[in-house]
Image (tube, rainbow, N blue to C red):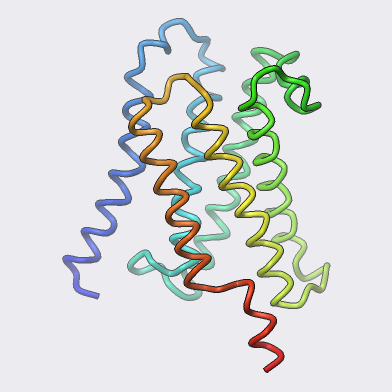
Length: 203
């Protein structure tokens, strides 16, 4: 890959991540929010940005981060994603415990809450399976299929959750980020063909 192409790819990724964060930072709604709530909201925005990076790393699409180095960074970003989600939920819990309880029990009147909870448990499960991979003694095909399934649930749940919320994220930049997250996830699924690993292994 040429140096110019590599630079353009990284510049596009930085722009895709920075634009929604900058737009959210300029939101007039922040003026009436508590600092903890603002931190929780930006942790959620950051988590969405990390969701864009993860499939790009998994597919080896980022210049200089393919192979073993890409997998190492992928694991690190996965840990950061778990932390971001935890901060997001903890901040919301501090500012409004009843709303978080209702969301966790799937009795919240707001539809976006259920999707957020589904995505949260999926990302926690994906991280847990990754951390316990050796102890669970999962075969590589089953490991890839299970991890990919949980990642897909995380992506879909997070995108629906974000799109249903009318908050500090600016609508157009949020929609663009969500579209990029979905596109990246679909591309890596199509390219890696994780569901076909078992068939190839047998043959």
